[in-house]
Image 1 (cartoon, one colour):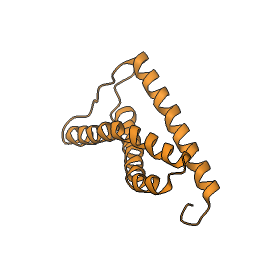
Image 2: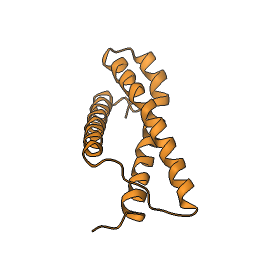
Image 3: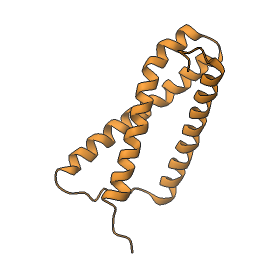
Image 4: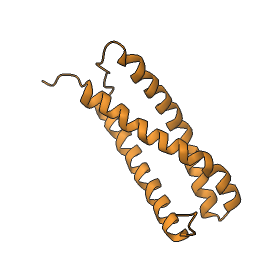
Length: 117
């Protein structure tokens, strides 16, 4: 949208994405405080695949938090040159964290879920 000069739509989408991500982070932390850790049940070749995805996801999720805040704050302060420079890094990392988060979730809770009582 920003490339098409749809600035208001871009701003609305980015603010929405930031607040939805923030709500997800709060719900995720709350869930894990209440439930604790869930162990991955997969065996064989899938274990290193899962843990490689998990480690890269967690590492970049930690990195993306300050990047997203800085990117958003620069846009809100109308420092668009500085915003653009950091947004070029923030967007692909944010997408990677989002996609790998879904993959990790599906692997942990659906494909290799612990048996239910």
